[in-house]
Image (cartoon, rainbow, N blue to C red; front, side, top):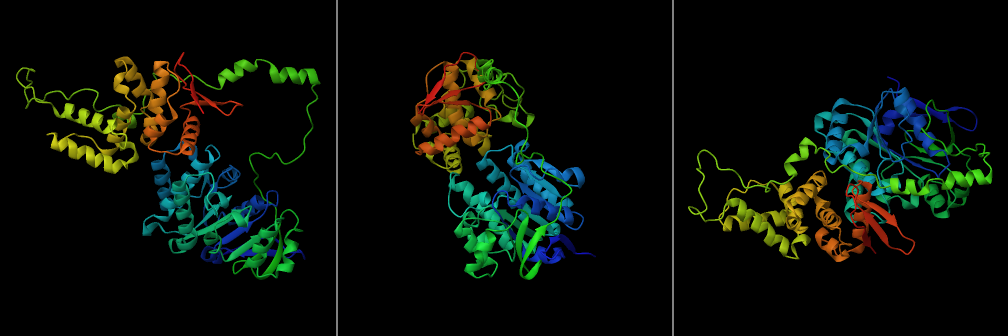
Length: 490
């Protein structure tokens, strides 16, 4: 079976090959500044090896979705799936040996990183009988394995670093061959870069990146400057799957292209200045107001989430084995009443939201048992949602308002439900801003930065609309609530 592909040609015009069997065992690191031809190289490699090996592409910019136009690749839209669905899809990818492109351009940066980490982690954790050989190509790898912490949360960084380290360090025994591509070697975690034995180094201009590239290629530092002079589409290659000595390679042509290409020149518009001014300003107010589309408060709730609306909305009806009794015959509190009162007590404790969900749930069950309720009938996910309702004080609203709030929040993830309900309650009541400390207490944090990231996340989900103000403040609006007051945040 043929195991070599032609990646390009050297300076003499001789074809340069990559041994795919060797690449599967030794991994590959690609580096090049923006515009150096890094994506073109990856596309050439993927196209030429598409018939030889399964391919999994982590694509943060949507550059590689066009592979599906010519090859058997399946495009998975990361923004269209839940965490559980992403993990199940990854397991099925390994089971059925499907070549896929995980397109992440519909997500913000932190969501991209979490989605990719969960997908790679599920690939890595596949059962032993599904350890088939596969290339796992990670473009813009400095996002997923950063050398230092950035704007993302520490939890997200740990999740992503663990997935990338497993891929590059332990993936070989599971059939996974990591190919990581980065614009900056200095921004890529060293323990991820160090696991590659094959290198393709493109044009770069910063001294620190040139020196690291020269070290990896086994070149003297005084030779590093030739990396700066490389033409677009040319790379210095080294490694057991490519060549035993550094070799200049010009990457060959590709059969597919990026979905969009804004790098070339095109004619400017011919509109006169007054016509262009009219185009920019006509109906400006209408378009600004359209940025906050109305959401129907009566939209159907997904069946899978209907059980989360509120299991304590109504007391359980008496069964045939338990005849109904009048209040005069039985004055003891029901298990329903005990559970609701226990939730109120937990919500009233300011320290509760700063505890883990598992600790709170165990405390809730213990308190219920001590009060005589031994069969609450609530799992931890339901408890988290009910606790969020209690924290936000939704039971103080009118019954119609309670139903509306719970319906609007039915599809919201439980870990962000409490602060969202606080915002929603303020909007329903037509009040001013919930205090920043109130949001922080509901979210279980003392960090203003986490609250800002939370609000940005809520906007990404379409739950709120944020209008930035030049004075540094923000205005929050809740779609689907007519006439609600705007929520001001610093």
